[in-house]
Length: 464
Image (cartoon, rainbow, N blue to C red; front, side):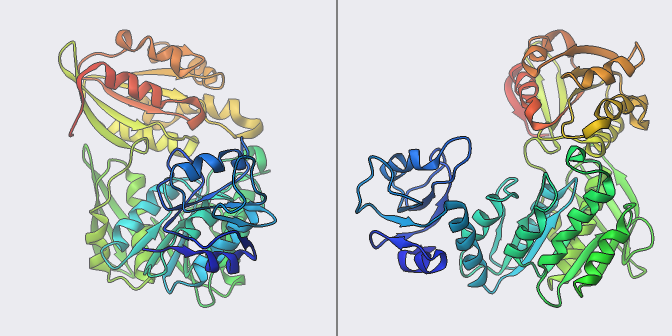
């Protein structure tokens, strides 16, 4: 199906085309580009113009550029604009404007990607659904997602993130959601904010992009819920709240098994229950927020609950696997290696603590962007309640040395500066029957620990 014609893209971006063309996708990376894609020559670590010739050789239908790159013919299929980033944003706005889709925006310090995937799984049962890929939630990820949106989309789920103040509002204004959800507010990116309240104000800015008559979905349990409410009210939005305390959707009980949770809740006092196919009570709260969002989008509650059962976590975000060891026996792996902050780290340790096995082992990497209190925040992980049920903790990175030092001697495992160093010690640290958690910020490469554990097996990962 044609996504953009040359004429449509030129009109959307106020650009100039060098030939007539059509594209059926949009890409910013030649490594994943598909034939027929529009290649967008963004400037990041490298200038995308350096890869235009390669993209066209791989079958790109056209390229979005600010100049004709060296080695590219003047009659090559190009869309020339003054600024490529601005051109992508304009294309995204046009993609959003031409669709009649019901749009939801998702942000939050923790859980936004998992909740976005929950929403997509539910909405796919209701109509043609378009959602952000992976964690494409920044200044290029949001317009890219919008530019990729087929014109016949019925539901769209747009993830919106930030690292610094002032980033969310313009992205939300591009997405123009009918419903916007803030999963939670926590101590993440503190090096760029003076306080968690400052983070709450930034997260609340998603409501500035709401369509007239839109709805704000607010986690009533967070300390700065009033900040979210005030921003939503200033936009004239309706407010729907979820949480364990006074709210429209109240989570009343969570029962956790090895690989799922069963939640009891109430909507305006009427009991309901739902299941989430992943261990971790935090997933129950994310699921409740997703259900509230889908109901506001017009989905019947029982259908939303059924759709939620289709979701399961993706690699690095809470996946549980059984691995056979070449030496005999097996281990249970909790792969939560994609990212980390104090809130998500404590939630992951809760899951590990609730697991049943002879030993519970954690490999924990540095949590980044925590600001002046980063050392104290790492050391404080030694005192979270779940740590009492963890048998041994191996620490990775300069910041995690603070946790290593704070742990009681019997719980204190190995410390290394990098995941690569730790990986070489895995055969000496793991034995059959262990339940093993891997968790850390993305730059700490805890995925290397996960890969190392899998390589200890004979035949790789098995279905849990």
